Image (tube, rainbow, N blue to C red; front, side):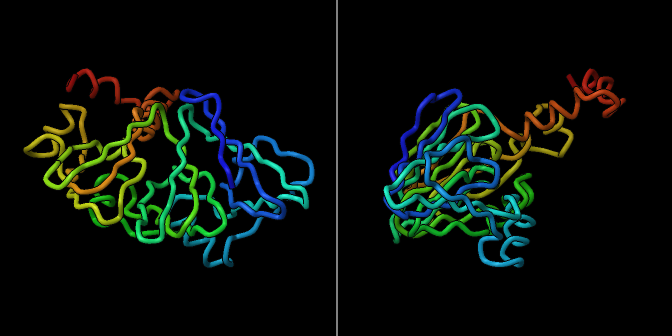
Length: 238
């Protein structure tokens, strides 16, 4: 698989160039277009239990799509739901990554993307506890809400990141979760901040400039009939 990203960074599309008879796994519903001869097949990616595990634990689709090129090769275009960039994660066998739920878009043959417990930090940080582990040798395409930032931490380096802005990170990196604002819960409500990760190097982080959780919260608050007392509460703490 040879990914080629265009229309980035705002409305990126990844064209995945495939060798003859080469397969690639993509998120259900991510296909935008493909060349003649490419065959699509939808399945649970390992059986019903594998589909349930992926759907319930990591927030991904129950079904995954496998696109297979014909005898002369081909290509398939994939795109994400939210506007923003796409990134290609080049995997090596000795360097797996944790991928935030909802960011996986496609992965090449030779790589494995499976549900992974991200620890209590992810659970209480609003990320659901589980994400995906990307491992093997090859390439994984991830979606980014907004623009992409790549942070390489050296030994002794530290950085604090809002949980909703994390796309992926080295599985071996050290981190802890805490409230963004010290004190009781009411302090976090008043500040508008929630939970953050404190990462410590060495390791690599991939961050997105926009927060999908914040978008969901805004849509809920703006929807007619939703949270009728929200405006008063917002004025009280604003």
